[in-house]
Image (tube, rainbow over all chains, first blue to last red; front, side, top):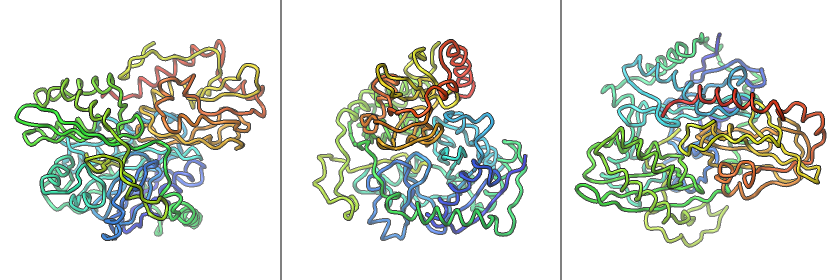
Length: 385
Length: 152
């Protein structure tokens, strides 16, 4: 089977997202071939997940000051920072055959094999973790997402961290911390990895891109054919431009709101040599993210694995306890699972509505922030795709 | 039959309704009414994983079978919710918009999504799985799900 390969650099937020969605729409309708697009953004962009509230995920003032565009992905998950050092992967497929409508977990893992194979060629041993991450040594190196568009087409999205400006990420994406200190930056960096960090050299993004393309071709048994000079047909370009104007440049799309309330909670756990700080971010009764921090915790990879397992997880007692027990089987001796479970559940119980004072003034008049001592955070484990 | 998820509840596929065989939406004609209530079945919910967000089109919207009733996000997959039957959306369940966990807790009761005033129920119902065909279809779908679900 032959797929088209498109490569590009210098995308802007709205245009990059419109291209991905339009190609999936057209693939589903049989108007465009299956396409693997490997691209980077011209400058840093902050992209929230399909249903997230922008003001709960992103520091809009910091984004404006740093020239970081903000937009909304068609795929789910949390807010991410993309830019010249992160490889965007978009796979647009017809979505027929054995790929039926609801098989999210299987789809995610199947698509991830292309990235895993490409990284392996480079010497990076990544593996699929939990619901939607690729990790190396417990640290996240890529985030994954799948979207089925109305035409039936499938869009597989991934963000591969070739490099990462952790400091900028902490400034523009909301984190667990009101003030970002060197220690907090170290914690954020400890939850993620990059291709350059793993290889210990300044690998060129073009080299990573070539390996990822070969990885997809080999693992999914397809032949990748380069698109013609411009890469896109005239019809495709017109549809992308129309979608960019109508959707991805629309404030109604970027700043849309969800009916599911965001909430934040915190608890402390006494363990080993000191206190462990546990913070949770909730979307209704779903845990969006958990952050666990303790000065004496030596195995940051184990903590990153715990946070990944509890991301987008039901906030119910039994489900949380079982997940932490399974985590403890793999990381014996890191933290007492029963005490950790109690702390996570206490943070869930104490969660209060996310502050709204920093919402877009034009769309939401400022209100007094809810009583919540820790500020708002959503992506304590680092960027997700 | 038992699911292998973290809540270990059995798959429940009631025989009193119709199912869209590939999209895992159920449709049930309400007693004493022409309306058809629609929701997601337990196999579809297991396949999706944790359901984080749901949106639904407002009452009064007209949909054809296969067209979008709304959207959802679960385990980072976003998707349209395809109508199992054609008609006009008579009402939607606003409670699941605020609390999507209701869908998993009670998929055939409080977790319903919309009620449709069907335009061609008799013909379209024949395209759905129902009655004696349900057990074999459900067993095959559960088998496929287990084969595709990666181990944690």
